[in-house]
Length: 159
Image 1 (cartoon, rainbow, N blue to C red):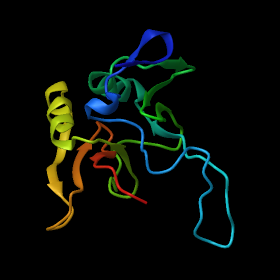
Image 2: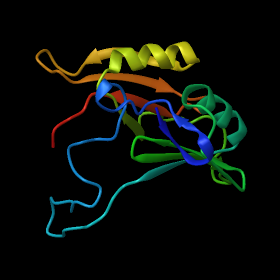
Image 3: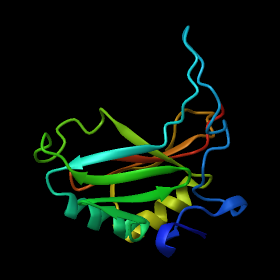
Image 4: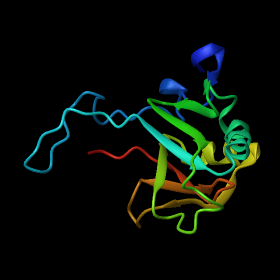
């Protein structure tokens, strides 16, 4: 396992042995193409605002280990090459009424094995591992946190 800040181990980075790891389909500094504009950017983190960030921190700590970063009521975990942070937000009240609106993904080379590990750690399952289509090799599993925010395990996709 790789090491995070302050000696916290990343439970998902298992390198070539399989499991959750950073995407290998494009580098972090590669330009994004698609429109008339070309951006040299990198989406590197997500912030999950909550009325009860302590509850989310406890939940995600069961799944990902102790946060590698703490500051001002915010806690974060490095998962592969991205950072997930939970913290207070004055515009967020109660559970998410539309959990499918924004779903964050964790790339995994073995969705079924990582699903079993997260389930054993106490993850709330929305959908057990399934394939996207009949001939697809892409696997997805969906979970929910205590605020009803969805996140998924997802097989690597070629871009």
